[in-house]
Amino acid sequence: MSLFSLWGDRSEIRPKVRLLFQLAAGIIFLIGIITEKGGGFTAHALMPLMLVFVVGTANFYNFMDGINGIAGITGIIGFGLIGYYALNFGNSSSLSHIAYCISLACLGFLPFNIPKAKAFMGDVGSILLGFVFSGLVVYLSQNVLDFVCLMSFIFPFYVDELTTMALRLRAKEKLTKAHRRHLYQILANEYDISHWKVSVGYGLFQLMIGISILMAKNMGLIKVISVLVIYGCFFAICSFIFRKKMRDFA
Image 1 (cartoon, rainbow, N blue to C red):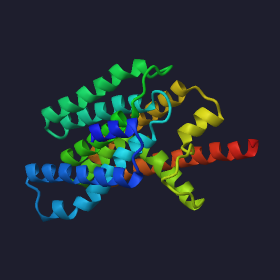
Image 2 (cartoon, helix red, strand yellow):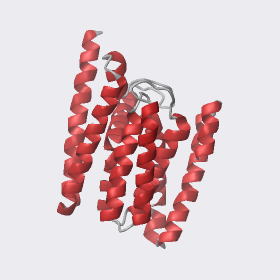
Image 3 (tube, rainbow, N blue to C red):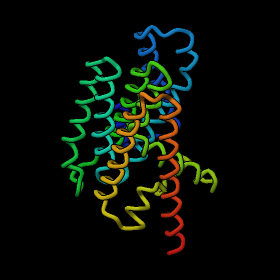
Image 4 (cartoon, helix red, strand yellow):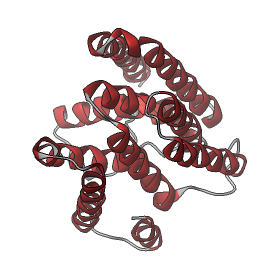
């Protein structure tokens, strides 16, 4: 996946070819996870949904890597939270070490990308991070509660991408067409807020959600979902306000 993404950074690859390769890589990845964990009928039946999650997360991470610092900060916090979860709830020190190492790798990359970019992560970095993140989520999930908790650790990326997709579909835009309609892009471009401020804001929001989910985990699935719904509504309202003001100024 990483080498293919590096090829995509160097030359143009058609979206359909990208998607087919990512689906193939996702299938191989998931078969490996299910085989190692000894998954039964349920695991195999859920494989199409898990495949959509893995490939979707890889691309969402890539789509959200549009301003300096946002992918690096999200990686530091997201993989750091997964490392903590794996060690304290997943009983997996090896996966915890992997997650912590990736978090530290993002920390090492950050000074080269923020406040002024001397280097960019590109597809080779962002797609790989999303792919590995989703793989860790699938591997560590023993039930639906685990899955919801783990995927919430990059919740700002999911909610920004999904709300933007909904707006674009409503406007009858092609989803494969390049755009700058994510909220983080609007804040950085239309509102002229410094990239690092937007990225740090997203990171703080992400950290707040992660801590809230860790605190709510022992209260059960309904409580965790309720917390995410509240945060999702808050984000959607903020997105609506900023987008409306932008149109009013125009």
